[in-house]
Image (cartoon, helix red, strand yellow):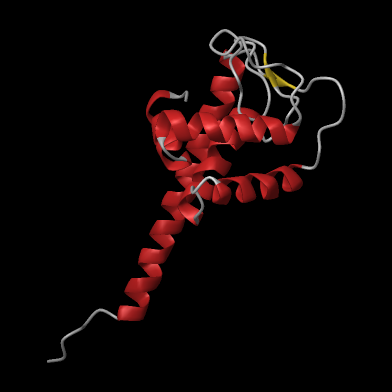
Length: 151
């Protein structure tokens, strides 16, 4: 009598498929939650003027993170996700509900000394300094944002 055994390759393929399905479900849930939060907050709209290419701003952010001692892929992934959620990396983004503006969504009521006419690079500098002082790293800020829906 022959005994059937699991095929390890098929088992691995099934595990990978479950992981891919789970990742897709989480991504869909995150996108739905982000959309609901933006609708509840009145949406995010662009201001006057064209925004610089987000790729240029993202490259600048990576350079500044390294200069501030916050480099590494974990911190970059966290910062990318955080600011993608907050503003879509749009330096002209304004939250209609709170008045938060820019890439880092600077809240004027909490930071009245910050001028509204900062360039995208200045917004990144401000945002990275804020994150470093308050959370220690983009990973810390992202973890807080995931728990509270704000940072």
